[in-house]
Image (tube, rainbow, N blue to C red; front, side, top):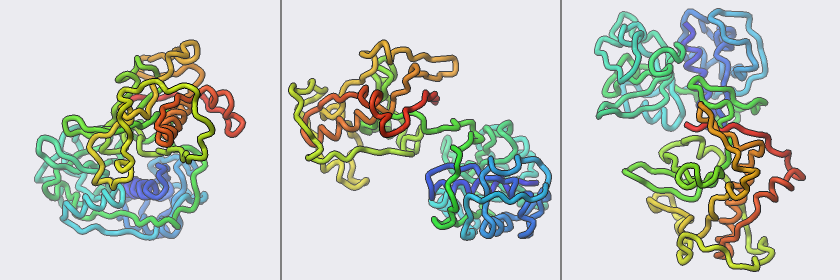
Length: 398
């Protein structure tokens, strides 16, 4: 009965992510082995408040720095913790808006449900609604993690992460009806308070693979965001890739923009290019763009988010050069697509060079109103003088 440890650990991982923008797997085994000092009962079930109190005082270590999980209580080891918390907050009970607000503002939230109902234990897919679930003799007996909400065919639901492996439910998750207190989901929600000073150290290793099977290195390929738009009510970003015009929509891909699809929001950056950085004008005029007569409206970029246009694209405004890759056929056209839809860009994973070069081309366009194609090969050949050369990277597509 270590569900409490998994749920609270997941909530702290989410709170730590909000502070650091890094998903660091933490050790639920540490709570099972060590939190008895704060009233926890190991494998016999524990209220989340006991776990919160322990993490506030002692902190939690990284998953890969503690004893691997086994369903038993072992002697408590004490590795250096990654983070503490300042306390926890009990969310207003029996309130759908309050739980949604907690999830949205404070990351995944711990909820206690009735896991004895047959409809819950045998759940496999769909939206769970059972009037008997939550009305057993001990209606609150299992801790899970509320990670979001949604709606399907007009039926609102909460999305809960369980700790019964990915073989249960929808890959380890369950959707419960959100019109009321289904299975007790609204009875005792809570979340940890994690302040900036609670973060004790950055983990030394890259985040490990998550339970949903996503990449161990979720940020592994650089592309260029050139605009955004909307189609049939679905907002999207427009990304320029470096895998030739034969890939995607002429070398471009549109990714959903309601959330961090494929990690697009995780580490965006752009170059600062001042007027004095421009060393010389190119001897020849740049190649014609899709619409050379149009210029970039700087007030679009300076506008507040609610004033931004629904559609924006730098391509017709002349700031984006053609997709380059195939012209260097000997070096860049040896991509392959295997049975798992995994792309390999030969032995020269130069996406970083193409993306940064494209960003500098756009910044130079804003200064000079001329689209000057610059050399990504210069970065590949010469930038090792400043940073280590990149290593080959596998990119997984959804």
